Image 1 (cartoon, one colour):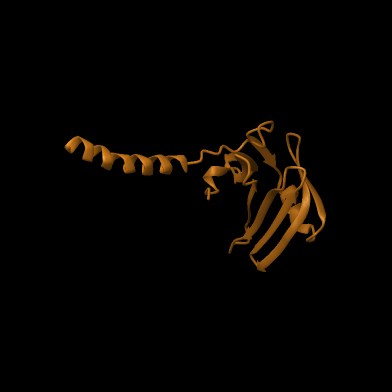
Image 2 (cartoon, rainbow, N blue to C red):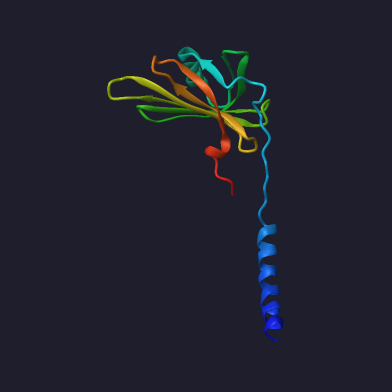
Length: 149
C-alpha cells in the first residue's frame, strides 16, 4: 500500500516537472558580423560626421577594414549641452541600430560611446578607447547587453 501511495504522489510531480522543462526554450541567435574583424578602427572625424546629419536623412559612415555603416538617421537629439545622441538604422544589416553619443566633460574633453547591435543576432560592436586615445569598435556578444524576455 505504501508503494502505491508513493507512486501516486510521484506521478503529479513528474508531470509538473516535465511541463516546466518543456517550457525552457534554448533559442540560439545567429551571428551577423562573423565575416568582419574583431576590432575595427574608428577615427574621430568619422565619429563626428554622424552628428552633422539631420533626422530622416541617409548617411554612410566609412570605418577601417572595409566596414561601412549605411542607414537612415532615426534620432538626432541633444537634450543637454554636454550630451548629443544619434541613432541610425541600417536596412542593409537587417535593421541593425548604430547608437552613438558624444559627451563633453567639465574640462571640455569630448568622449564617444557607441554600440552597433541587433537584438535578433548574437554579435555586435561596442566602441572603446585605448590608452593612447584611439577609438575602435570591438566585437561583443549581444547576450551580454540584451536580456532575453
